[in-house]
Length: 446
Image (cartoon, rainbow, N blue to C red; front, side):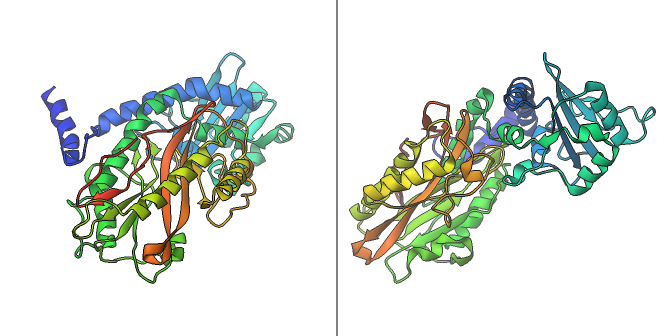
């Protein structure tokens, strides 16, 4: 018991400087949670998806160091990669989903090894025998034009598999894209029980980074803060799926166009009083990801709050969020939501750009794409995918607002993670509705 308490404290204490610290679990506890969630997904979600799409057999094939993106999400906590060649077979018997591994090992406790190497030394022949014995009507393989996540079958693996598969069964092969996307995009009840904590933890790190404990105006650079975020993630025993960015808008001659692409963003800018700071930040914890963008303002001498004009600009960003999330209706495509939201924003005089995306086991995840920053008239393929229940999204967008005092247009760039339950949308851990101040930090509003 003492050892357990000590371990928990070791992970808890680094967050003591942040408001309402969130406990970060030791690895053993994380593994237990990951495996419990995975078992629940296999037993309850997988049958729904395969039957929804009329797929009675799904085969996922990967080799070590070239793992299928879907297979990686199906490995138990103690498997960090495929082993040699790992083949997963899911077959709907009508009563249950049979879960088999055509591999030298059982895959954890959930996929039973079904390859007797003494009987059939060739792995492909062992797979072919499994197929012939079960006589599936549709065999799904992970091939997809639209989603890299669902296109994990390599050309070599496909060729070798088909060479051993009887001709009659080759005719039954179909793309498993919709099942693969469904598996990746659907968030279960168990996942949504922990996702708020993960998003809250990410928010806490942003608040700490955008505070006087990290930023000393006139000394600290944007690059310093970026690397503080990276080090903080590592020190807490967490991971991230992208390198953070921190940038500045200020009363100078620089327009906001450089903020549109990563390649043109200046780095190592010294942070000064009067600057409007922006961060793009995310973490990976318990196999779920966050993606958040927030703002802070560096107070000038004598200032006690954010200037009213910047506050008003920020409100336009919040309003654009509302306009988009009001479009969340089951069955609408990403393109339909995008175009309707942009039309409404234009009617309200908001110069908005929307580039929102699904989030979950991947940062830029599978599901309906709701705009790209350089494709505001719709995104072919992924933008035509419909909105389904129990899916999560990063509401990512910006509002361009003229700021007379600065004689320029600024861009309010926001991103928050949310969940659609099939009836309504909600932010998983609230959203920023007031700009943080440095050195004095305003309360976080949900």
